[in-house]
Amino acid sequence: MGVDLLVVDTGDLHDGAGLSDATTPDGEISMKIFDQVEYDLLTIGNHELYLADIAYQALNEISTYWGDKYLTSNVQILDQQTGEWRYIGNTQRYFTTQHGLRVMAFGVLFDFTGEEMQYGNTNVTKVIPAKTMVTQQWFLDALNYPEPVDIFVVLGHNPARGGNTGSTFPIVLDAIRAAHPDTPIQFLGGHSHIRDFAVFDSSSTSLESGRYCETLGWLSMSGFDATNSGFDGIVPGPAGVPNPTRKAIQNATSPFVYSRRYLDWNRRTFEYHAATWYDQSFDYNNGLAATAEITKYRQQLNLSDVYGCVPQDYCMTCAPFNSSGSIFPLLSDALAKTVVNESRKDIPRYIITNTGSVRFDMYKGPFTYDDQFIVSPFRDIFLYVPEVPYALASSLLGSLNNAGASQKRNLGVMPVERDICVDPPPAHLEARRGEDSVSPRITRRQVVDIVPGYTTSDDFGRDGDDTAHSEIPYYEIPDFFQGAAGFHKCRQADVVDVIFVDFIESDVLAILGSNYSSDDVSYYINSEFTTQDYLPLYIANSEAFQAGMANCTVA
Image (cartoon, rainbow, N blue to C red; front, side, top):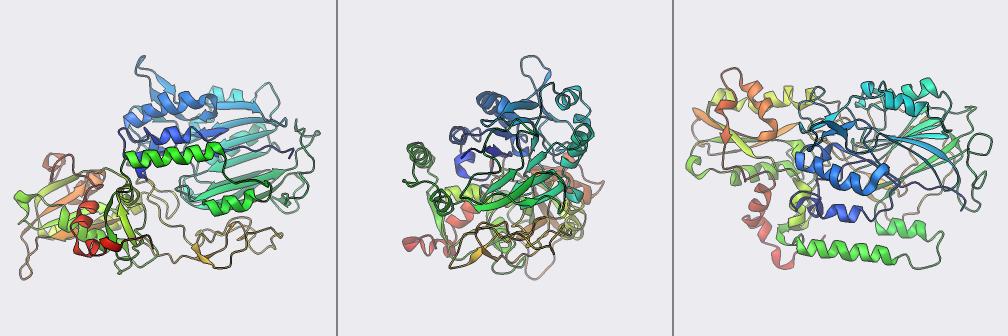
């Protein structure tokens, strides 16, 4: 077609599904699947940095396999042989595309550091703040590279939008613009789990492509020719297909025009778009081989083993918190019934965890071993402080929600507690640029039956979703929730065992006050029973979840 196509991954290859999480270490099998994607550029996410063994896996396997395509411009790791800090991947990549575009690329993680947030990276890794990175000599040398640069590509596990999101892309933008005021800069972001497209200036935009492999983000850009670049492909663009037509800023003198699309990640979407060009079977041998390999690994890991039959849909944010359609009353009951130390079961207890540990809805139908990882991917251990006075223990949840994680993150966009994210709100809270302007006509998929899904609003308007959806209701959820058990119906408890996950230990101790310290904390059950275990145990022993097993099918 005479154009260039770059395939990019913006980080987080761990946590959230059995294929990656049911092995030790995480990713031992899923990395082999990712290796089959023909990526041009990749970068690291914060989920590669929580645990030392996963961080070294990124160094020894991901970085080794992908070479200079794996960019970690501000992430280092402690070399186990030398004891010195080294970059996990490359700091930058300069390359020329098939059709002559000369690209300088960086991979920038958001400021995921202990100084910036309570829960940071493992101490064998170091995240260099962006404001420091842009002053380092290697970065300055890249900006003054002796060969021509037609476009800067900055990918990163970093929210696409600036402002109050916690994104460090604007810092990188300003640094590049100081040396290259007119050169196009394309940002490709992630982490905040939303579909978004932001305009920075007349030749710089930023795309974010959702979460959890639910979205394939598509960005197209035209305006390169022999007068402003090394591009030797088709100008102005390939015939017979939609071409980008919209300037980043209306009436800008920049020659560059853009389009963006958010594609639902499913076979029907890909068949639809592939059929536009190829008069042949959609399946390729390498794709069929990858599918067979995934199926083989799923069988080996027993990911389809069924624990119970979910009687209805339970969602995180599509129903009011604590309503019958919310997942949290169910999880509160599961905590109360399964997080039990037999030697202390007669002592009243509160079991507190963070809503950020819950990552996905539960759907009517089979609940499998795979779903165990999808709903609760983190292995947080249950700790406790014994026999806390009732007056203090009973106020703990409210105090946590008033002064806990909500104080440490920007609402809905820049999560701190392992990406506390929710289904995307109908629109961002900040005002959109240009929503009142008329968007150019684009070709969209025709959908006869509209189903709930993403309804995205971004700087180019509301026409970015490739498939039209009806809007999903969205309700706020608190940062923490709890289960309660062992309380007498007729009298108030004097003392309560306060149980909580290790991930929030410092939050809990801070609110309990100076009379309590880590010396008062111990395992409630043992070091092996975690947040991945309580829900499957509850489902396997619940009459409501076992009743429909004989005829349990996907709804």
